[in-house]
Image: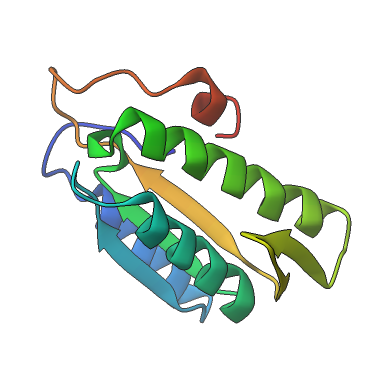
Length: 123
């Protein structure tokens, strides 16, 4: 999780780090309208391609979507730590390529809701 004041370049730092070590980093700006299905497709694509995913303003996602995101990140993390070549995701077996990594960038807003404990524990 990357946090700091609004407009301070948090997402840029993540993307620049990925570029410096020659890894594709996909940036995605979150909002309350992002569905669980969209997040699920992002996590699946991240795992299959072995790229980084930078979820900008992740704290803007709806609570239920954040909980599902936490569960899916945990599954990718367990599979990666277990040196597995694939994992079960949404009823399908998804191939896993390293170095899949996800960054959550907080919006920096003072009125932003707190992240659920399930997500805080991962980061």
